[in-house]
Length: 135
Image (cartoon, rainbow, N blue to C red; front, side, top):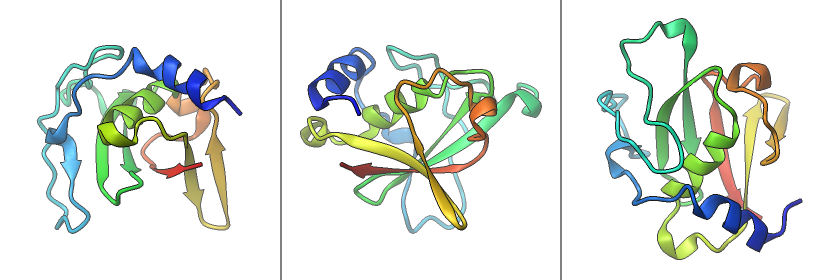
C-alpha cells in the first residue's frame, strides 16, 4: 500500500479544477450529458464520442460523497488514468485523505492497484462501475 503523502504527490500533478459538467446526480433519471470533451491537465481529454465504440469504454465511478460521475476512456489507456480522474473529482477539502478503488462484482470485489499499468481492456474494467472509498 502506498503511503498517503506519496499517493498525494503522485496524483497532485494530475489535478485541475474539478469538472462538474460530467457529474450525474444519484437521483438521475438516466439522462446524461454526452458532450464531455473537457481537457484536464495531466491526462488526455475525453475521447470523442464519434470514435468506433469498439475502442471506447465508459466507466461510472461512485464517489464517497454519493455522487456518480462517468467518463469515457480508450480501452488501450492505462488504468492509472482512472485514479487521476477520481482524484480530480474529490472535493478539495477531502484530497488529503487516502482512498482506494474497487470494482464490485456479484459474489466478490476486486481492488484496483494504483501501481497497475494495465489497460482498461486487460484489467476487465471496460464499461463497468467502480467505487471510491476512504481508507
